[in-house]
Length: 268
Image (cartoon, rainbow, N blue to C red; front, side, top):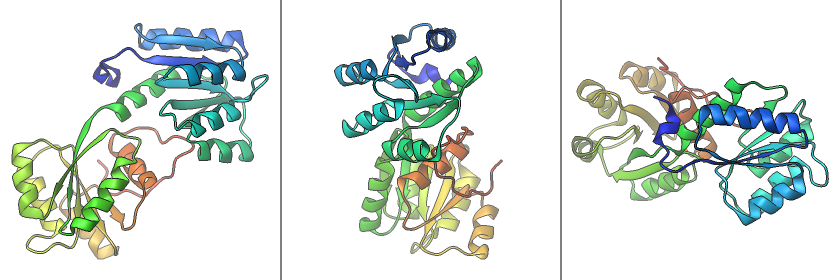
């Protein structure tokens, strides 16, 4: 299913580029993907900043080399206002300095010109996958750790709805009453380890991905995790960028240029 179908409201998209050809091409590509999208076209960075501060946009395609204010500076303005706009930078090339700034300002990805309609569709489908609500269960016997993990997951770019369980038995009870997309389980828990919980889930419940968490990581642990069908291993402490990388893997999304990549195992 097209992931754009999960969005209930029309997309609001900005295309900022001093080239009328690029603006028109991107608009046509967007219309083919989503005929209901509300598209705003602007020709320079100054107007882009003005529109972005006056209104809320879901996605913004921002050319790097624009008159008056560059696309990098537009991203800086978005960063200062703590905007949640899904920002895509565009140009025919990207310097190391610009890449570093765009990454620090929170740009999601970079499109190399000339790009095709398929690239625009991929961006929109990725946006739909990231914004789709996903129920997550956090399983750890430490209440403090559960709170820390919850704070980290809450900072993910994905739309995660978080539920907690204090041990494996409580997790299994929760799973019977509610469908979870992903379960983050501590490896070392009394009564039922994360490995044992992953094995129970694999045997009893379909289509649930388990990600194990631990302060230690060895080949033996990795092999045990793979045997029971766990999808990845997060070493504590981990950060939102680590979570986002693994979720890109699990949802088969292309890793954006500005993202961190984390090793994952047992990928099918």
